[in-house]
Image (cartoon, rainbow, N blue to C red; front, side, top):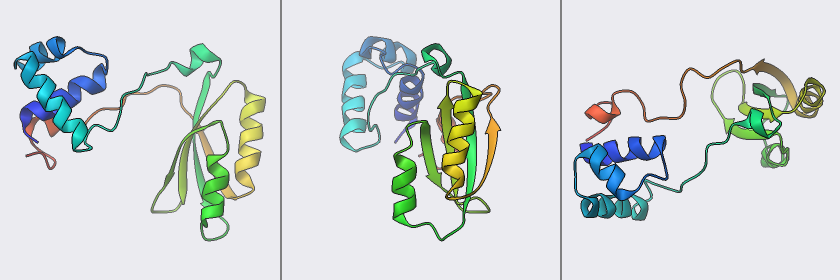
Length: 152
């Protein structure tokens, strides 16, 4: 990974539909060089796919939240499988520290949120925080483009 690969990753995170010509202008390389680099990033598993960013409020899910869950029993795979079946959960992470699991969710109304909290609470103690806004969207860690934080 060199600075051009990092710049390409950053540009693709901002716009996964950018053409090779657009990416080439962004990173100051030729379009064929960009195409070759992107292909190598895909083949090596650095780029694992492309996806659309969706404004959840515009599809009827205006309430987004983070739920921390402290499991009552040591986390078994059955618990994680059951959490994966809850459609309102958009992310679910096993973590270290006081909560065992941190999840993101999206719902259409406060009654739906209450129902979700009740479903999650059967696995342990939960704490829910409603997301008001996002100060940082998904991106590469700060300093990565300059080769800091583990960059080559």
